[in-house]
Length: 268
Image (cartoon, rainbow, N blue to C red; front, side, top):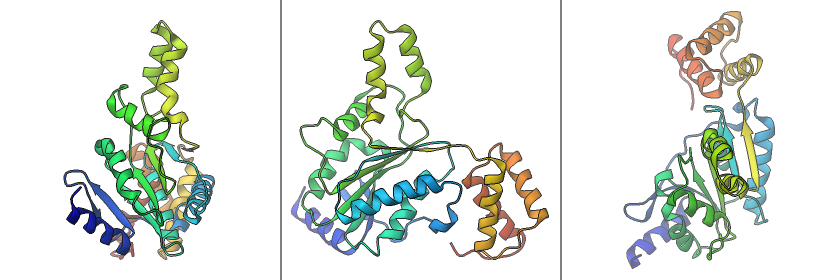
């Protein structure tokens, strides 16, 4: 990395708190405003929220903490939770930083390690969203070695937060097929699940019941001063049935539609 690139990154880290890794130029692009919501609005995931919040708070304080894998049903707030917790804590912990890495740029992790090692007084959350693998390839193995077993240890001022729809970051049928067809079954299966084992925290997100889904709608209505009544309740149920799921994303999309129909402005 050149002198001017290093100087630019230093100025960014000193001045700003959130970034996206720019793989093409090997620099950090500053995020002016993080797309997140108030933590009070993330309901029906209280256990997940408390676990990740305490882990992140301890990390921000400088304590030893675990890398976290947030896995499970789509649209239930995995990536939103990471960003919202960071937004909540960044003002109390002014040395806390967030760097989002595109899943296609995971080969750059060790390069980012080298850059961040020059700023030991700061605490960096490396966030990779929607990560999964269709096979055990070079991408899979580099993440595995990065988490544990690499010659270069993970710096103490870095924590990895990764979201995925899959508990083991790969399709279940890959593991099941290995159990039924491999010559050395145990070794082959262990290879496939060993990556997720390297996260100290597994935080699962599961499908919401109708009551949980409606509680999310009600919470949004109270926050935005919308009158939650039987009509809204019934419309919210029909909305979820049309989309074939009940999750946080569906609930938020319903609220946006409700506000538009009533010519109301929401403060995001």
